[in-house]
Length: 78
Ligand SMILES: [Zn+2]
Image (tube, rainbow, N blue to C red; front, side, top):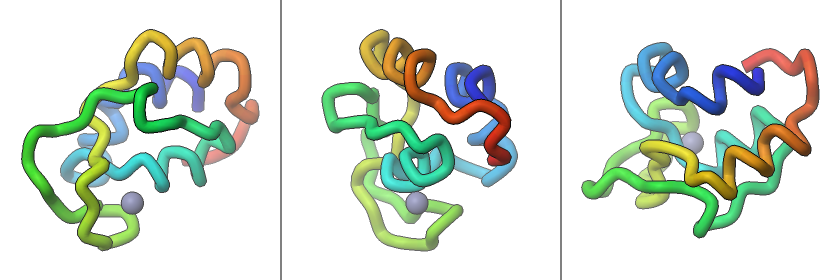
């Protein structure tokens, strides 16, 4: 789970596009904030929850990665 979140590539591939911060938080149990992530520049629909969301995460910032490493629930399936 942690490595999947850190790279984001696998997740993006699996869902066919970047997913929103709410989904990331739900899957990981980590409370990522707006400033913990880099977002895609366009407004799109999250392929996981199918909601129009402007917080599609392209990548985690360093602060986000630290948060994931500290707080991600181990063994939780994506
Ligand atoms: Zn979503």
